[in-house]
Image 1 (spheres, rainbow, N blue to C red):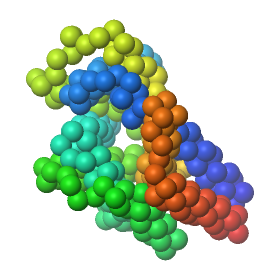
Image 2 (tube, rainbow, N blue to C red):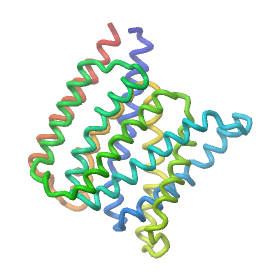
Image 3 (cartoon, rainbow, N blue to C red):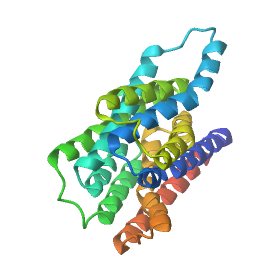
Length: 288
């Protein structure tokens, strides 16, 4: 591979890692807000849409007032909304450990979708990295698996499928407007959540944390992660999302003094080492 391709690959890695680092604060911000999943989904959708609306409008004006690839935007937005809603509800209906373990299968779905719909070949090193990382996540959560509710587990499976599809859509349409997808997906989340939410009776503190997550944290994180699909295969992008499983408990521990168990630390080391080796090997192969 050329030096330019190698630099592009490294740039994509840095962008995605930055996005995952930001999104890993999601659990902490939800805990600080102290509200139920329907209210989180409603306000997250509203705030994300408001935050990205000016950028969406600017892009629309530059395009002469004619949005490009509306079908692709709506497809990605729907997958974003359903995956977010599914995960939030899964955490309320089953053990958090169950949902996180199931979510670790997202790279597998991304690999399958990229193969079926885009004809992209998934390297053996990526398949091996997926399996090792999934084993690491199971290791982290091994003491909690098995006590969840079937409906919650099924919602987590559905959400995981949509996460894999979400990144595959962006891989298929690399020039798709990220801001338009976030605005549309946010509106879908809010509309779906509204009938079961009580959005106007929350405390001032809760609104503050939800605004921080919706206006700043989530839009920037999702923007960075989806931009990364311009430089990396969807499978590799979703693989980096496993870092959230390790980082999120650390932030909660730092604020709420919830000490992560030894299994979390051991599994985290396994996942981090696997991602580092996978990344280094990928860069070296592109430089050859």
